[in-house]
Image (cartoon, rainbow, N blue to C red):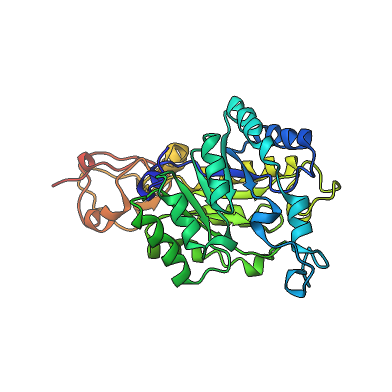
Length: 346
């Protein structure tokens, strides 16, 4: 699969990624079940996150390391990442499960050791998280591998996004996709600003998509209508199972409905086409055309009384009405006769 923009445009099917994140709740069986739920719900790929609390932050109780607001208010960064991490010894096994099911497999590495580990288990695609969009050394480390890269852009300014894109391109890697993202958990629809999607595509010349933390399917459907070629959405088994991400994640049935909704939008978008489609054949026959409205003898003049523009479309097109008026009938014509040129004297 190519992730160059022109190739993604040819691929009419949106690539839908199920993000596991911390929703395994520290239970390997739950993690496996999420992989199977992703496949059952119609996802194209499952995504993990590859880090340890020590690669994410410092083990400190000082004020900067305390979360003061939002979904994780009151948490310490180190303890939060300790709970949320996906053990590295699970990840190769989960990849095997995904591949066996025909699912794509990717992960978000948060430092160079995570990239090295993911290389060792043979991933063929990388994800850059919104919070790491400005970590240019890490992006460079990934980009040099010449594998497709998907980069979330939450909080990113135009300049910051451009710097990340330039970094990937400087490594000779053109296979990238930018995801519009709102880094709020959950995000409100009012904060999504999805009209940024076509602007990003034009500005950076890459494929675009959406990493969505809002509730429901409205944002993914809208994004696809605006040109998104990738949708990433968190998946959990049950929001009643408390995990750091469950509050803004979809349950399997909801995810499956989102996939159906996205596929329906794709079907409705279709391609650029004019004229009657297959389903309009009957309707086309009920357009207006020229019909004889009164009995006419040869030589009678066509007037507004004996020549009408009515449905259905069995006679000459209405555009010929003014041309025929004033001319003479070439034969006996009964009312209800669709007019043809053979019935009009030269």
